[in-house]
Length: 548
Image (tube, rainbow, N blue to C red; front, top):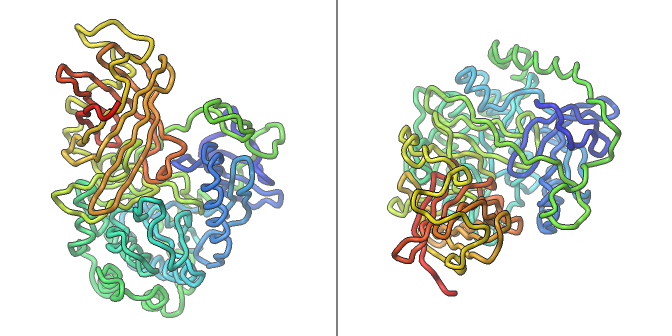
C-alpha cells in the first residue's frame, strides 16, 4: 500500500482513507475505514469515465448486480455512489493475497488447499449463476486467499445470463486469454459453463504452478485454448479428472459449479476451511498482513466529502472530480520459474470491485496492443476472434530480442532530429495534413491491424492527430481510438504523444496508456508509422494518403 499523495482525497463518502492500494485502467483503489471501524476497499473510477453517461449506467447496473450477491465466498459490496461527481464503490476488504501472487512466491498449493479453493469457488459461482449472472473473468488474480477461505472478486464484467455476448458495439468477447472458455474466444453465446472452464484453468494453475494453456504470443495462446488439450503436468487422481471435465471444449460436458463443489468437498467448503487450510508460510504471511491492518491510522487532512475538483482542463468544464498527478504504471510481477501464467496483482488485490486488469504470462513482462487494439491475432493461425477486455500486460513479448534496435531506440520525445533533417518546427507541417491509412505489424511479426491517422492543423503542445486502430478477424472487430499531441518535429518527422480518446466506445478493450509515436514522410510520398509502446509490441507500418 502507498501513502496518499497531495491532491488525493482523504475521505470518500463515509470512509476515511488509509492509503492507496493501487491503480489501473478503470480507476484508483484505496484502503479505507468506516466510522464503525470496518476496513473497506474503495474504488474510484477515472474522472474521464464520469463524463460518459453510458459508463455511468453500466457502472450503476454492475454495482446493483454485485450487491445482490450474498455468497459466502465473495467479498460484499457495502456502499456505492454511481451518481457522484466521480463514481465510487466500497467493498469488504479481504486480507489475503491473490492466488497469482501466492503461487508466484510460494509455489503450487497442496491438494487439500486446492480442493478447498475449488469447493469455495464452485459455491461462489453457483450463487453468481443463481442470480442470473456470469462472472466472465475467473482467473488467479481475481481469487483471494484469506485465512477463513478463498474469495472470488471483480464482478465488473459480469452480465446477465441470456444477454448478448458482445459487451461493445463491435461484438468482441470479454475475458482473459488462457482462462476464457473456447466459446468466449469464438464470440458465441455463453452460459455459466464458461465460468466453469475458467475455474478449471484456475485450479490447474493452483495445483501445478502453470496455466493449462501456454503460448509465446497472444495468437498461439488463444489457438491452443480453442483447438488443443490442456497441459496439466504431474496433476493426477480425482483432481486431474475434475480439471479435465471443467476444461472440456463443449460447454455441455462441463460439470455444474455445485456438482464440482460437492465432489471436492462433500460436506461443503466451510467444512474444509479451518486453521491451517493454507500452507504454513502462506498462512503466516496472511496472518501478519491481517494484524498490520489494525495499526493503520488515517492520515491527518481536512475532512472532505469526496474527490477533489478536476485539475485537467482538457477534461472539460464539468464540475467533476480528479486526483491530481497522472497514474503511475503498474509494477511488473516477479517471474515464475515454471514459465506459467502468474496473473497480476492489480489495484483489486485484496479487493472486490470492477475488473481492471488481466494476468501476466511467462517470465517476461507482457504486452498489449497500444492505445490501439488489445490483442493481435495472426491471420495464419486463424484464431476465430480477438475477445479480451480489462487486460493488463497480458502476453509475452518478442523474447530476449526485446533489446534489439527498436527497444534500444529512445522514446520519440527524447530524440533529436536525425542528421540532415530540417530545422525543428513549432506547428504541424502542411505536408502531414490529411488522412493516412495502412497496415501495422508488431516487432514479433504479428499483425497489429489497420491504422488510420487524421492530421489537422495545430501548434506544438496541441492535439494534431486522431488515430483509429482496427483489427478484424473473421467478422469480429476491435476498434480503439487515440488522440495525439505534437511533442516536437521537423518538416519530415513528427514526434507524437498518443493517449486514449475518452470517447472511445471500446476503451475497456484498449491499453489505455500513453504512447510515443513517430511519423516520418518518405521520398515515395508515404508515411512511416512507429510506436515505441513496449506493451503493444512496438507496432509499425507504412501509411498512404487516403482522401484529403
